[in-house]
Image (cartoon, rainbow, N blue to C red; front, side, top):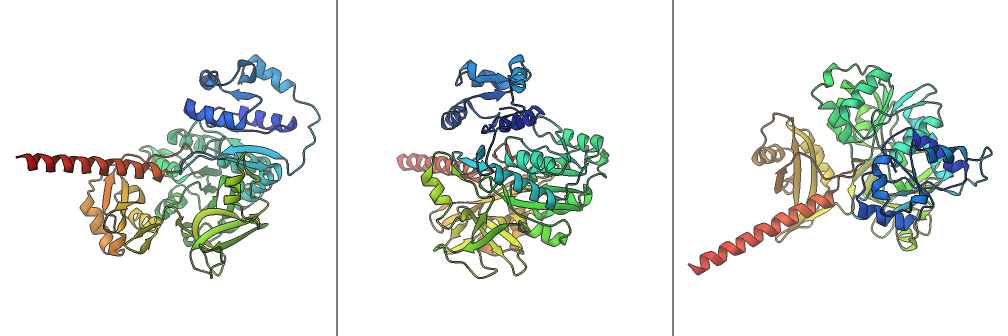
Length: 460
């Protein structure tokens, strides 16, 4: 349990050499969250950085706690057997607790076979080569950093470059320039932060060519700007989830930019995909339905949770992603949105991501998230949270006017709020459920004030 550091690699290979299972933990977890995960995983030994050791000491016995860079840590590494333990490719290697965009995290169990193969094929699609220098600003306790980053480098004889312990846009830009990195990873919010950094223009990023933008829906305008101003002409989009090791779709480096900004590419090698309706029937090409994948990348199951495992993986071995998607005749996949995010307003199905893409085209909008909230008349209405660009003067009426000539009237957000940031996980996944809760609290306060005002008028 630590921020990004070289010791992650030492612990990872030392544990595997001893035939152990790794449980990467988010070092920013609240103590109560730590307790829940630790009680669920029951680790025999916990390795952590000194800055988080005091928190862990409240829930873990000292004899089972090892602090990085301590004498006991060195002794632990020296005890690793010279001849690695015998393990099967199908043995559990990693227990990843998902970051929880919709609620409490679940423990996804991933095998050596899951991880090594996915890391290799992602690296191939990304164009990592022997000698590549891959800048990894994403957390190592997440699949993006550990599998796509570390193991992607290991399987391609490339160099891992960590710009900072946790994401810092300035340090990432400085590191890319200083280390002449040719590959850069990040979630959309990380790229947005770098592009909008006030010192962005002073950095020489000409060494960059390739990379991955993943972890959350990738705005079209952001992707175009990264490809041009950051010299990442071969950047790819990757799609997946922790439960699929994680990547199942990725665009090609030579795909036309239009396809790289509007789709998540095609299915990865040795994997199957299908799109199904609510009854589990495969839909025709081009029609939206739930995206399901099957193959080597699908997790073994959820840790100590057979019920949720059966809900996620059906009897045919298909992993149900919960995402709505379409696949065209050439195999390119477009993520329409989350099944749970789809908004039904007065009988009309609205996909928030479609509305977000229209709003991203506004020159004064830096970032935007659209989601549904309850409405007594239509059942649901759209709400948009907007982060304006620095110096922009944007109001609700300007946003609605922008929408009127571009999208159907029922897709125009009724509720618009201007914010400085969005609630999100430490890996950059925006938590729309948290935004929805804020809006519900706001509606409740407004209703109470309305009732109170009515009582005052009635007593006059």
